[in-house]
View: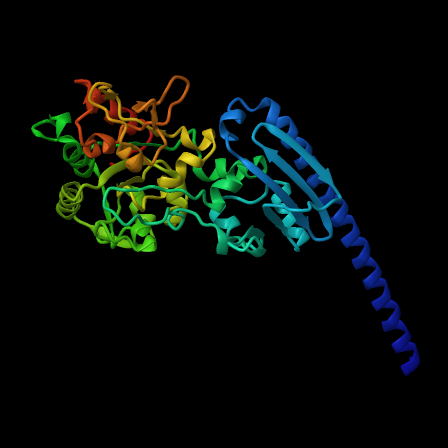
Length: 418
């Protein structure tokens, strides 16, 4: 018969062995995380040399990023094209603090196992930013950053004015190479493809209708299903004072049947009425295949059968911060085929009102004259907002005769709404 002392002794031995095994497992986990962390720091140095658009993406970028994974430390210094890092050290005055205490989460992040950005922002990953008083405050990532909808610029006080001065925490993080893989899976730039359709009257008509309404009607009539949002998520979150919240997005195609949030199935007549009201209000239609929206709106798996149509205002649209994104995330936003925007230097007074409404960073004023995409740059998306805003009529937007047909053909090659 086993006595009480033998039982207690046995339990103590088992407990000690479990504790020792736990310590060994934790040490092994720390070793793996540290190896991946060191690799990440070193890979960033290679990225700075090999990435084609690194210099462009890092223009004006100055960050001291302190990483913390459990007890593991290290930091990166980004000074435009200059990059350096230190392992097992803490920066004296970091501008960002990034990491987590959970080594399992750290391993998933460093080993590139997190599926997409919305999944990432629901984790216990921490980001520390400086407040107005210069003090660093660490919060869960979902508290300091977001994913569209929810990462829109601050609403401006004047209609048609979208002067955004602050670069969001999200855009700061996206320039750090470690975040690129997760963002590429989220946005899927190779397969996502969308276009802005200018609402300028100067563009004329297509099949006897204003161009934006004709294009929208074309896709609405082809669609197997239509889904109308109850309101625009970007304007709702930004508390827009300039445009109706109810003029929200639409979705077309079989993928609509997988939609879970923000709205309901609607008729084609209701969709056209929404389109007419939005265009009449001065909202810019944006349409195409966008994987990130499919993720957010719960319409996975992404099968190329869901077209997203947004009616964007210049003050709250999530794309307002897109001009601060790295090049690899801007490529899938394309200008409408055949659209050209030009400036008459004799009429331009350099008033800079066009800069206020250009959310893509495609306008600048040089020697008191507005310039659109100077040589080597490709930011203008031909939205036409600058033409509508220019007080002297110096800006002109035109479209080639077959531009609409070419644009429809491109979009149809990426998404099927039937």
